[in-house]
Amino acid sequence: MNTPFPSAEPASPGQPAGSKSLMTLDAALAQVLATISGPTDIELSDTFDALGRTLAQNLHSTVDVPPLDNSAMDGYAVRCADVAEAGQSLPVSQRIPAGTIGSELQPGTAARIFTGAPVPPGADAVVMQEQCEASGQGVDLVVKVMTVPRPGQNIRRRGEDIAQGGVVLPQGACLSPQALGVAASAGLAKVPVWRRPRVALFSTGDELAMPGQPLKPGGIYNSNRFTLRGLIQAAGAECIDLGIVADSLDATRAALRQAAQGADLIVTSGGVSVGEEDHLKPAVQAEGELSLWQLAIKPGKPLAFGRVARTPFMGLPGNPVASFVTFLIAVRPVLAKLAGRAQVAPTHRMLRADFDWPKADKARREFLRVRRNEQGGVELYPNQGSGVLTSAVWADGLVDLAPGQVVQRGELVRFIAFSEWGLGA
Image (cartoon, rainbow, N blue to C red; front, side):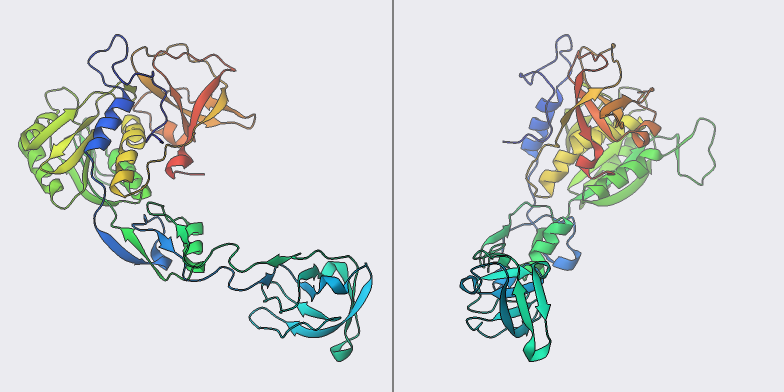
């Protein structure tokens, strides 16, 4: 069974050595996902508009694909018995374009046929036109077959791709562009999908301002609102953007109550640390419950999970990179379950480290921003600070290091591409 995230942690999901107060990512995800319910609301979506949606039921084909035996290429349909040796000449008795039905092929004749056209009864092979020489025209058209055909050659059999009544896409599948093509080829104009998860999002912090507004002394522009909103949308969820909440307990509690109305998940950034102006922890405890709030990961130690009324809550760190990384590794698996998708771990590959990492954190699992190079290795962004958001733009993935893992140049490391989360190429 796949885990929601590939583990780089010790076999035991307990506490890392020397850090009894921290919970491992694997243990935290197991606890979180055990409390998350899957979707219940099914919508019928036009197949044309269902990109990125999750199937709520198996899809069964209404037709055989292809519906008839048809030609795989332009050429001539023949009876193999009539072409016992190369160079055999046959009169062309009919012409069959795609979308038309030919008549039964008479012995000793050939049929001019085009890609996708139904193979006429009696024919048992199609010879590509490059292996034939045609002469004459009209009723005098003759074709010389320059190769001996095999039975079934260049014929696509009825139902060889999809059988009528068969399952073409399983429940829980995310509808990619190619999946939509399969649904359409199966004759399905509408598909049953789960309702998109609704994610309520807000940021906390009196220092935050929106781009275009003047910055007051000590202020910063709110990058997390843009990053997290984009990540929510990239995950196929609907974002309910509640903006910036003032640094006060009352304001935070009010925002949580509003967020819990109609949302399937609440995501916040900032305010989950232990400072006097960090109000999310007591606010969530007052409006519901807080299950955990510090993980053995870096970046992203102050990550909270709980409930506000009946709505799950996840509080991400305020530092931009920590917020970005923890969304990928902790929130995305939750959104996948809320969307009804099968839990599939992002694929990792072992790549050569073209960098040294001698300063491993002994207590926490580390996620480093890296970029693949033309030599097949990965390079490290020089500043791995959790506030350096430009590193996430420069990088094309993360290196996942177990607690205490040091890296010497040339060693293999676990690399996960951002494209595994639908981000970039």
